Image (cartoon, rainbow, N blue to C red):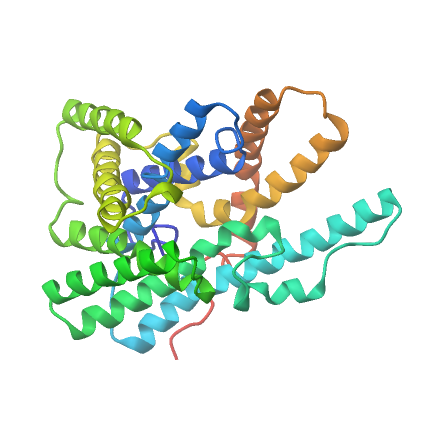
Length: 346
C-alpha cells in the first residue's frame, strides 16, 4: 500500500517515521482543530497541510510498488495488503456503529438509526453512511492507483507512462470541476496517480539510499513549508488547469520531497511517531471510530468545555489509545491488518 503495508526484511526506519508524521497529521485533521475552526489562519494552515498529508501517502505507496512475478501475484498481494484490511476495518466500524446506535437509541428512548444497507455502501456509494469508516476511502483509491499504474507500466515505456498519468490526472480534474463523481473513488485515484509515480521514480533513482547533510534537510523543510503556507489555497477555489497543476502537483511535490529528506536526517527512531508509522494502516482503520464516539461523549457530558481544549485533549487521548490498539490488532488480527498473508500462494 502507501507505505501503510510495506513488508521488507529490513525496515527503512525513516520511512516509518515519515508515515508516522503523516498519519498523525491525518488524526489531527480529523479531530477538527483546524478544519472546523472559525479562525481564517487555522483554515489556511489546514490548506497548507493538504500538500503533505495524502500526497505523501500515495508517494510512499509508489516508493514500494512492485510488479512481482505477474498479474496473479500482484493481485494476491493487493488483496492481502489493501482489500482485506479495507473490508475488515469497514465491517468493524459498521458493527461498532450499530452497537453505539443501539445504546444511544436505548438511552434516548428510540431505536437504532443505522441501516443494514449501509454495510454495502463501500461498493456503490460515493458517501458512506458509516462515518467512522470514512478514512477508508483511501484504501479503495489506493487499489485503483496500483492497478492503473501496473497496467500502464506493463504496456508502455517510461515517457508514455508519465504522459498517460498526466492526462488521467487532468481528466480527473475536469470530472471533479464539473462535479462528476465516479464510483469507487476512481476520479480521486486519477488525480492521485502523479504522487504515486513520483514515489516510484524516487526509488528508481536510488534516493532511498542517498545521504543527506542534516542541516540541509532541516533547512529545506522549513523553507519549503514557509513557501507552502504562503501559497496554500483551498482546492475548491482552483478554476483552471494551470492552477490545478500548480497547487495539486508542483507545491505537493516540493512538500513531499522536503519532508522525505527531512526524515532522513532524524534519529533512527522517534518514539511513538515511528511506531505508529510502522502500523499506520491500523491507525487509519481505527482512529475515526475513536473520534466519532469520543465526540459523542463530549457532546453529552462536556458540552461546556472549550472547543480547542477539548479537541486537543481528544487528539492526545486518541494517540494514547492507538498505542494500545495497535499491538492488540497486530497480534490478534495479523491476517486482517496486512501483518500476515490472508491469501497464500497456491
